[in-house]
Image (cartoon, rainbow, N blue to C red; front, side):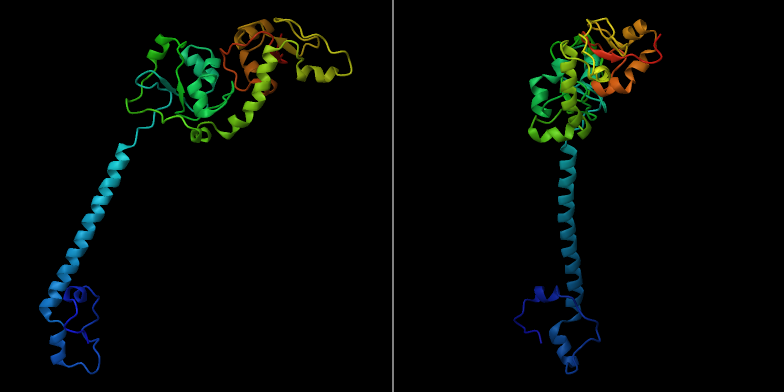
Length: 277
């Protein structure tokens, strides 16, 4: 039996059994003492009120969450520059070379920029970036070229540079290949180092002196570029299509992705294709 001193509001909130679910000794007189019909009606109404209040609170919380989501910065669109012309947002698989071509500058100023290095660590010549990676536009970039690029919205800005961003920007393949490409850069700038591919076949013989720029190796396997040679200029000299040079497995293994207008440093070794004249 519920005592009269019990809290009526608390009792009304408890779940009720069916009307016929009563103890055997209960009488009709007792029924009225426990809870009358008016109380039953008001109890149901109060339960509904409580549910309404709870629903309103949940609705308010949901509204706050929606507001927070709306406040999140808009992700920068690939291939655009920031509204203040400070950052370029890459397209998927962009490399320092392809970005440099778009900005009208040397790829090295992109890889050696303090802000870029603080965000992503060491960046190799052929590193591939994920879409919307923010790269600082160097002062040496062509201002007219940069202004012609589409601009992102004013709130589409990169997050602050931090070590935590490193893994999100560069994919694993780029990170793994960067170490190998450092060796490639050394091969391009050092004439005193022999080219591995062509000289492995003649290890038993005396190693020849690397030919000067514009020459071919003694076994006619490699062509050594002059400064600022491109796949097109090399193709003209060798009598072949420039695509067979950029798509050659050996050349790609050494230097990564090679674009049609990529410029080579002096004495860069390129495998001479079989289709050459």
